[in-house]
Image 1 (tube, rainbow, N blue to C red):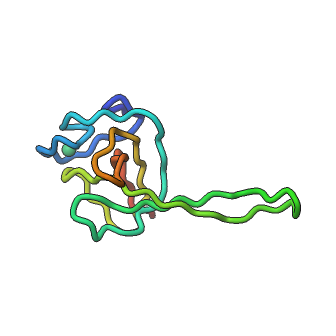
Image 2 (image 1 turned 45 degrees about the vertical axis):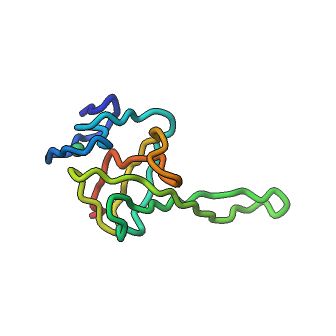
Image 3 (image 1 turned 90 degrees about the vertical axis):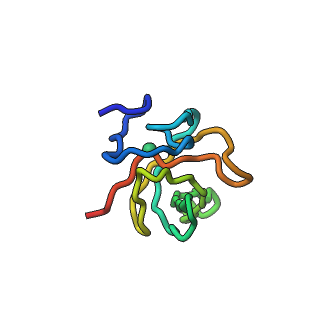
Length: 108
Ligand SMILES: [Zn+2]
């Protein structure tokens, strides 16, 4: 199912948030990342952590690295700690936030 021009499932709830890619005016363009929500203590944002493998040629091995990105959570989406989320790049919403959550899944 496609929503907001993305290959994601639209949330069932509706919201009035202008910073919502489904019901507001925010346009998602650029990168689409997926990771784990590690902190949902913020009022309208979540911290998403992504893990990736960085190869070290000298030892011919990989090392696990992680990076964190803050993303806006529109009110129509319920994101809890540990959720698998997909975030899309949008215009900068604040000093550190230029991503918005476009999909959230509860891991089985
Ligand atoms: Zn919404």
